[in-house]
Image 1 (cartoon, rainbow over the protein chains, first blue to last red):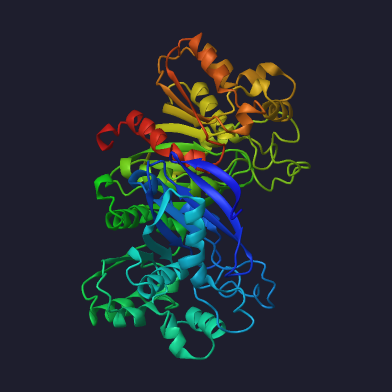
Image 2: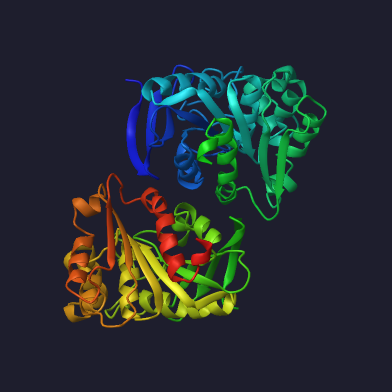
Length: 289
Length: 289
C-alpha cells in the first residue's frame, strides 16, 4: 500500500484526496493533497508548491485553483513544504527554516541530509508514487507553479528538469535566493558554504545559463503591497527578469507587479484564473478555455 | 468613529475589509468582514451568515463568493456568528451553543438576553452602521444567504422581514430547528420554554404561514454525504420543502441534494457560483451574468 487515503472530499464536481505516505527520500511520513477532476480519460497535472509554513491544506482550502482545474480539466498535486517530525534538533525553531521550510532542495549537510530531500521528493518520488496510485493522472503532461518559497521551487525545478514541465508560473517567488536573507539562511544550512551548489538552485542564475530549446513563456504575479517584496527584498523578481533579458529567455518572462496586493492567499486566489489558463494552454487544454 | 478597520486586503480587483465595532445590541465588540467590488456607483449587497463555530474569516477565506461578487458586481457582508467575550458563564462550554453559535435570534432568557441579540444585530444595527461607513453599499437592494446555522438564519430572516431581502438561498440549512437537537438546545436556552416564540424563527413553520406577495424562488443545496443531514437529522430540508408545497410558496423552493458532498467549505465553494448567480439575478445584475 503506497498511500493512506485520509479523506476524499467532493469539490467542483471532482475529488480532493488527502493522502499520506512513507517515503524513502525523506524517511518520514509525508502528507499530500491531490485534486482530480471528473474529466474522462487521462488528465494532465499541475504540481503546485506552497510557501513557507504551509501544509497541503492551505492551498487546497484557499487558492481556488481547483475551480479552474475542474473547468479546464487538469489535476493538481499539493505537496507539503518539508518533512515533518524528523526529530532533528532545531527544525522547529524558526518559521523560515526547517519544518514548513524545506525549500525544495536536496540537503547535503548534516543533520538535514537524511530527511530534507524535497527536490527529489517533489520532482521524482512523489510523482512516481502518484502515477501508480492514480492511473488517470498523466505525469508525462505536467506543469509546475508555486507561491513564494514554492514559486522559487517551481522556477528552480523547471530549469533543472529541462523539457519535463510544459510550463511554469509563480506568485511572488523568491526569485534570487542567493542574495536574500531567506535564501542565504536555507541554502547555508541545507547546502553548506559551497556557493557553487547554491547556483544549481537559483532561478536567476539558472535562467541566465539555460540552453534547452523548451522555452515556454513564464507567468509571474507580484503584489506591490507585499512587504516581503518592497520592504524586505526577499523576492526580487526584477533580478530574475533582468537575467532573462540578458539570456535566451529574453522577452518571455511576463512579470506583473499588481498594485495593492499583499503576499496572502487572497493574492493567490485573485490570480488563480490567470495562472490556471496559462497552464491549461501549455498542457494542451486550449479547447476548454 | 463607528468601525475600526483592522485590515484592507486587495482581492479579485476589489477590497476585503476586516472591521470591528462596538455594538448597542450585543453590548460587545463585534468583528465583521465586508467585500466591496470595484464596480462604479452604488452596489447591491449580499448578507452571508456563517455556520456554527465560524468567525467572519472562515467564509472570507474559503467560500470563494468574492470571485463571483467581483464578477457580477455586488458587495458581501460576513458577520460573526455570536458575540464573543461577553463573559457569560457557560458560553464557551460547547461548540453548538454560546460563543460561535448565536443562532441569529434575539435571546429573551437570562443570562443571554443582554448580549445574544444576533437577530437585531444582523438584520438591523449592522446594516445601518455599514450603510454609514460605506455609502457605496446599497442596503435597499440586499439579499441574504447562509450555511447551516447561517442557512437557518437566512431563511428565518427572509420570512420575518417580508419584502426586505430580494432573494434568499442556503447551503445545508438547519431548516426545522424546532425538531432537531441543535435547534432545541439553542432555542431552549436563548428563548426559554415558550414554543410559540420558537415558531417565530423556524423556517419550516414560517414558510407555511408566509402571506407577503414577495415570493422569489429559494435556492438550497444539501450534500448527500453530509453526516449532519443523513445521520444526525439536524438539517431536514425536506421538511421545509414539504411545508412550502402545502403553502403559497408551492413550487418555488429549489432543493438540490447533491451526491457525494459533505458539510464543509469545499461544499460551499462548489456551489458558490450557483448561489451568486441566483442572487445577482434578483439583485438586478442580470446584465453581468
